[in-house]
Length: 138
Image 1: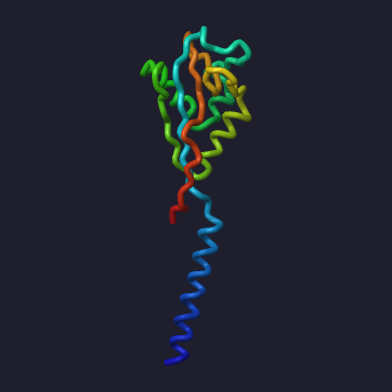
Image 2: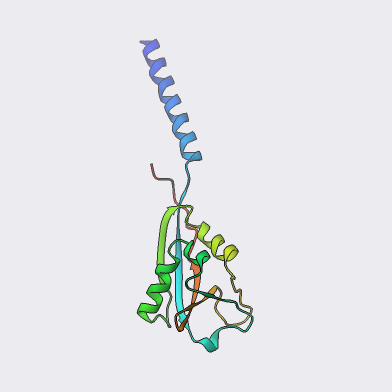
């Protein structure tokens, strides 16, 4: 009986250790909200670079085109149109927007983000409400 208890206890401890190791190495799920809104051409800062909506680098950012399309379709001037990404590493969208595109960081009352020419409109694209980490899904 003692040997049986010892074997069951050892198996339980081994299972706990393996599960702990797996959850530490598993990638965390995160969420990123990508937002876009229309601005007047007069509101584009003089030192901001405006990217064309057809730019390849813009197309490589998950959800960017959907956010732009939604902002234009809904005429989003008063509020941001959101696209929520829920997947492993979604928070990296923030880095990609800031590192691969000409990200404008305002020191005045202009919007932070990437200014995009979408046909005859200007849209500001930014990652908002990002990096809410969650426990790994198993």
